[in-house]
Length: 116
Image (tube, rainbow, N blue to C red):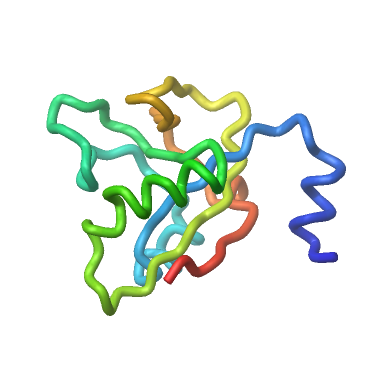
């Protein structure tokens, strides 16, 4: 069992969000964390500034198949960050997205995995 899975077993009261990004952003994110910004992937301009998360893997996969993959080039490596968003300022956007409106420090990033 991985360290990430052990942490999840012992901290099941945490709220975990899944954030999709290009792998080329990963080293900067792991150093600086995630910073709220204007939406660029599929959201309308009137949407909130923030960091967009999916609440679970099924919702992420549904969004990926429906619209999200269209915003990335075929040859780009895409990753999913698993992030502890417990007690961060947030609200729900659309039907399912969690929008965090404050910076997320790197120590909140639990892990990541390649999507494509």
